[in-house]
Amino acid sequence: MKKQLTLKSALCFLISSLFIGMAPAAFSANEVAYGSFLPPLHSVNKYGLEPWLKDIEKETNGEIKTILHSSGSIASGKATLSAVRDGLLDAGFIANIYIPDQMPVSMVTTNLAFLSKNPLVTLGALNETTLVGCKECDEEYKKLGIKQLGSYVTPSYNLMCKKEIKDLEDVKGLKMRAAGALYTRWAKTMGGVPVTMSNANAYEALERGQLDCVIGSTAWLKTLSLWDLIKYDVDAPMGSFMGGPLFAFSAEKWNSFTKAQQQIIVKLANKYVVSTVMGYIQDSEEVAAAAKAKGVNIVPPGPKLAALIEEHAKGELDNAVAVAEKKSVKNARAIAERFVTNLKKWEGIVAETGNDQEKYTQALWEHVYSKVK
Image 1: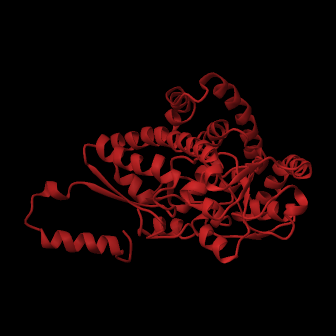
Image 2: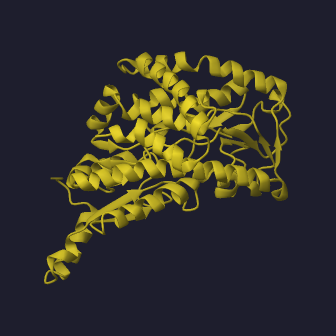
């Protein structure tokens, strides 16, 4: 039992007091308050979280009720873990890049973002590495009081700027939105000035001159309305976001579900982590096609920038291991190397499934989610 009565539980108590005479069935449902710091129209909410939560209600015949609190209305990206752990939220999207010191094991794979070339390949490899047979991962989440059910992956990040970027010399000194240490280091490597903030704040920062560029997904041009301000999108793979669980319950809430309910949620997590990534890919492709009409120029990288990207990626595995070992992560190299091995495995799987959502979802179930306890 929690020592403090949370706002949510206090409200529930008040409502139940007012309607004490109602039949018990009126209060039989579990409620899941889920927190997302992303805005409502973001691909993750649109293709993943909203339909996932609605299907949980449907597939449990209303035994579990759900509500999505988007735009960080309950907790910011940085505060979501503590909100879930302390009972202010029952579940949430926990972005480890905002709290790397609390999730050093999870950060091992996140810091390998520059190895991501195909989001579907990376999605399978990431979740197989972290959900199946990763003792260190399980121990970290148990310590945090969290039950996690998978992470999503974005299409490759690009460099999107207000001014024209022909090559590396045009990047020097530009202020860039760079999420976490991984992209802070990359921004510095390019000669830029990293600025850490949530992507939800990027529009205002660009408008005020606090940012010149954003390192992120092309889909953000539409979902975050960045194409009002961004004029150049350098189409070069600069890693991708693959940080922390999209579906994370407090252990207390997870344990309150029946085994049958848990199985339903796991099955739906499998379905909607794929839907999230497929939707993200679709948005990126549609946005890229529509960008010209919005005044955005999608351009290739200059030769110096292209060479720097390739050279930077070569040292990422050793860097990820070094960062983890400084934080006393056990078997960090084994985790990183298992991820690389799984990348190769999923290259083969995706070669067979292609972008067929049904086939890919089934493959992810067979290789990963069917093994989640």
